[in-house]
Length: 117
Image 1 (tube, rainbow, N blue to C red):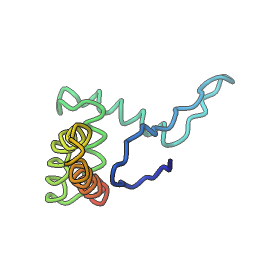
Image 2: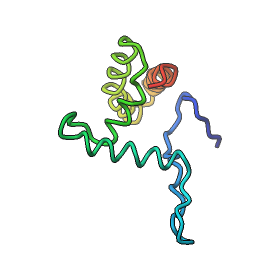
Image 3: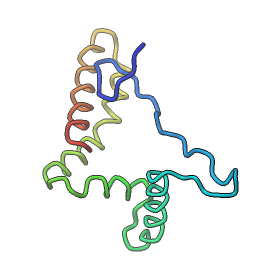
């Protein structure tokens, strides 16, 4: 078994979300910049929710994709909608169609990754 940050044919997704670490065990906060930024983004999303209607996760995606071109944003949104169906089809495909379903899923994941969605 091997792990990769890029899509592979027949790959399974894993959750590789880093831990938040320990905080205030010594009485002082020892959070890294990335954790502080994530917490700040969550607080901003909660504060802006009455105006935007976005959850913290939707806000994070919006912020991440902000600098993408309109065409790339549209393609990312299309991939957001199609990837769950492609994943389900790859899992449920009969053996005669499994390779085709895996390749189709791979292409969509690669496009998602290449666009920096």
